[in-house]
Image (cartoon, rainbow, N blue to C red; front, side):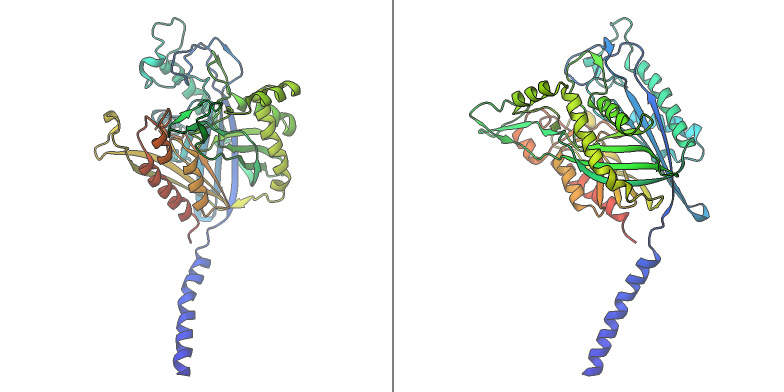
Length: 454
């Protein structure tokens, strides 16, 4: 009996050893990090249609410039081992597949040492920027507006400026470091009001007896990555917020919306040469607009002598200030870097528009999933309702998970089952619904967590 027990214990110990040894042997390598930055002015020099409202607006002026900010990352290890990514943040309503594919094609011809498939782009979702293609149909048709650039004309201008910036960022990459921090800034608010009869209305009136609640959660997390030169100087910061840049609505001028004021404020505090890389996290049911307390908020702005956009910028900058000392304490010049480009087929909602059916009734999407040390980053092509982002972050093995919507394709809203039941704009017309959202969450989580496996 004693021998049998001892043998059983020995076998149990031996069973554990291969896993432990294998984990140690397969630990992901930490390699030196190289970082490059560039910024392109993508403000059209001629009048254009402005995307974001259900009617045509022609730009009459430039309120503030539109930018495309490029962040190039690479690690290099022994034996030719390397990993790469180029991310491009654009002050536009979004980025569609035709645009990203064209940029990849042009970059591939210019950068022999970069895998063009590992370039990804996203929009900040400003409603005061131009379209890049004619897919909006007659809504923004300017063919009879003399002197106004068509979408294709602006696209050629955009391609030239962005590719030049991508090449500059990639060729200018230098040894550097990265650190992360988590702060707080109240920017986005749920914009769907729920009523006693079960209806949900985007920007619905809350000052009526049958108003019950807002439909969903809000995320005020300020997820931050800081990038440093070899001599420990800050070169740029990535700021991820769960809110589209839509404080400015319905105007007839070009604008980056509140990200312009954010860049100004960060420049004052950290230096004009510090880059600001804006990311819009899942926020299909969010906006900076207020559904209640509007009067008090407006009076407070008047007392402060600032605009709503300036208020948002100050909140973000204060959040950065609070987190920055913590980020300085843990800068990594060597880190684990992995970048997976995943193609996933999502089931279409039934009934879905026939024009968007693929042969097997699915919507193929491209996801970019990255590991940067303790941090994960994952893209999606939707105006993704916040709850899906919360699910992904909650199930991620990363210490901090940054999600980016409106990236690489134009796939419209992806509402939750609760939103579909309530109806209303943003949850009444879509291609991929809650079942597809479930698959998107599962596949994103799977790809993220695989980057942490031995």
